[in-house]
Image (cartoon, rainbow, N blue to C red; front, side, top):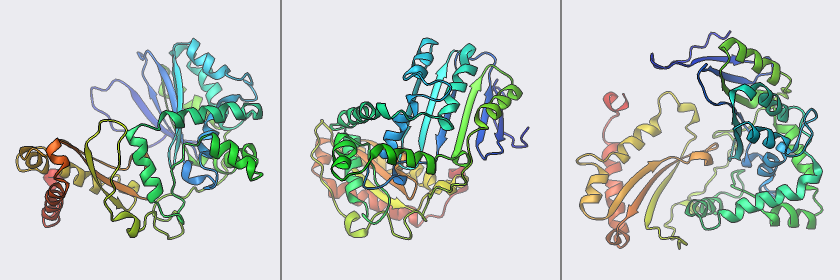
Length: 369
């Protein structure tokens, strides 16, 4: 068993253990004899920013194709059918630098479900006959986000990025995954297989499972079912080094005021800053410290002052979420009143005055605690 100790509250009934397999895959197992659902989630350190930039959506397409069957369980749709017939559900999503696959199911069927699930990562069929159908499924997701304010913001981020940097956001659609590759003589299926074979590696995977079995039994399950995944020794680029020294955004394209014409009734303003990638700062959390102060709503805070002046109704401070990997973001999103919509510059003055005050004040331990 691993010497890693996983901290938890004294009242927490579940038992946990960390294990790293010989192939480099890292896992946390959770034992809960009373759980009504068992499940697993596997994260691969491969995402949109690792695909060919001239084939936007390729990583998302691979995510879809992975579920089309395995050598032991070749029936198309068999995995999803098994999960649903046993009281569970499954899903997956592709981010800029990671792809996540997960399921939950009745605990009695967990072992069989895990056997089906694990094989996607070392013996998938990637059934070629499913290509058009899965491209259409990807296109359906793309069309569904067309009027979503968040996805329109993502579009702005995409257009603002440095074209010489690998960063881009691409759900994919029929045009870029079917029509344009065909016109250029590119075999999209072949490129998808290349992405899987070259980048999906055990040493870039992390796994979490939970079930009714003991920690020792769950650890054995992980070793048996995920041990066959090949460690290809791949080190996927992430952090400030991704991009061969080129910045993800250029000042000329970033230090601007952009006006977006919403398709929904949205009145908000966002202030956004690009930061060095914060993933390595998970212990000290400097960005979280700043977000806490900027989002504070007590007396004398930025939020309280803007509300007292009738300029905003809400202040939400966040990061770049799943966009992050070669950079991080600090975002202040303010929901505006009608008055605030007419006084954007005044709001900006308060925001930057508050930041200037924070810059003059050394970090306080009691705030961090």
